[in-house]
Amino acid sequence: MNSGDDVAGTLHAMGSEVAAAGEFRIGDQVAGFHKMLEPGGAYAEYAVVPAHTAFIIPQRTSFEGLPILQCIYQCSLTISPHLS
Image (cartoon, rainbow, N blue to C red; front, side):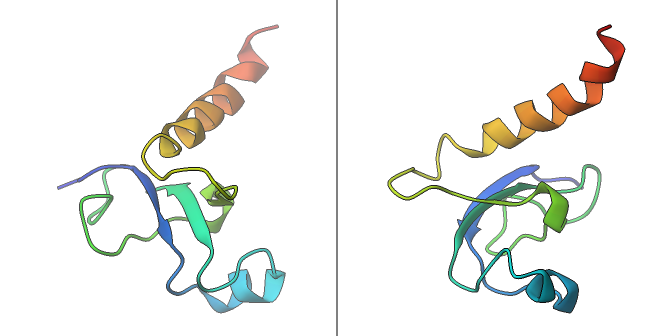
């Protein structure tokens, strides 16, 4: 069962390749997009997102409204090649 795709929270752990890239640090406030139709998701204490969908939440920005921006961004990247 899929339980939510847009996630936001505090970075607790990351894979070795993500750590080596240096873009994120443990403790960063992040948002991302959970893989659709995969177990887990946003309705859990911990969620896993692919690094290419994750981004650091700017300071003074709340968790509540931010994750939908990732969905909008992903959708716009998907459809933009088909607009011309």
